[in-house]
Image (spheres, rainbow, N blue to C red):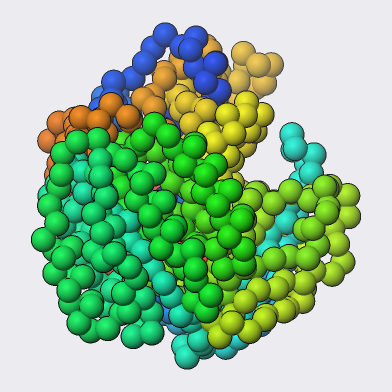
Length: 632
């Protein structure tokens, strides 16, 4: 049996459980050292990512007519666009997945629970199914849909809502935790508001683009298209430049150019004629040139967009150099936004560089998503409305640890979250300050509330693991690595310092009298485990820290993907339309759980969606299909 799982972009597999009459299978994360003692290793085709958004797991042959219970758990980000959060859960499966059975009436049930940290202003915008509101209380909403159907559901579940406010607003959530860290968690959120006419910054922008030979084909063509689209969004008072690089740097202009119609047309024509160049990748030279161009900015916000598909040897030195330079440059130092293509670049270096530069990091592991994801990053950076954000209570407080070394800027395209751990009592009053697009000062008091029924540690786990891993790579600190491993195992999120295994358990039937009990009614047998489970080590699922050899040899992203099984090709072809559709939406963080149990009698679908942080678009979703008998 081959189990595929579709993940929306920026999703992550958390676990799989398969229950059969005589066996059960469950995935489990273990430490790197512990994994070295496992002798049985699964083949690449038996478990892993066929594509960045498709996780598969192969279960040995199962007899026809067997009842199978499958539980899938994954995390995904909510889409965010124009002030609206959206969720999509795929229910449009290939025809061969749906059993060929006679038309028997089945009950379909969808329950949606929204638990928001914002008590007022939640507006439900749209849903794919006719949901009926059944409860509403202090930021918590419940909806229900029930219907008699004759066919397995083939309509993707979609739901969207917005938080109504014209101005920038935010708050603080606190959660008490009882784990290895022995500290509590805080999360500060800021919303850009829905005011479309809000003043964005006057900008000075430098695009730093990798044109090494490995970028040949779709990576470079998609990058060119995205840059041309970004240039068209600049205002006439903005200025820009483009630096293309491989082993040397090529500039569109010797100085910054005002974004006039003529300059944009010349720049679009210049970048369109650029072709890939062989040789090594030298990243330091173009980054230094970009920083030099933006060193004298006074009434604009300077920003650098870096796009690359490769790794370089001096990445830590680049981070140290940039950190020192930005610190010395003062208030309006450049924000740095980074974009990685494929699996050969060091995504943790790019994440760390963006963190140092108060910017955003994004990536495309699949060639089909490069342009869409890059457009989102460019739009987010170019619509900055608040910069140089500071939280007064963070100064000189050793008991508060913020996971991001520098607070990113706030964009019209995305809410902002700042989170970390604290010990003892949290400050009663917090004030956030920053600089607005018209260069005026911004100040706001933040209201503190307890995160009731909102598991901050689970919701923020994926981002926390990624940030801590970037810091572990940068500092080469074993303490960070150990912290990531512990968090990974506790929250079931894949990391660089843990491995996923598959536990296979055999079952056996025993009568009740063997346990000193007598049959009274029903089945006199119970199922018990007959022996210790067998542990199988799956292939490594994390992205790694880049590939210097592949970069030096100019190997193109995706060119070394293994040949897929025929069933995998059919599945990917069938689902391509689904992911083509969701590519056009933006993303923000969450968790979801999907459990399904099927037989030939009927199919009942229960979907529970609990928005853990409406303020940042995070959610916990539980979706279940079960049908013990025809009357259910």
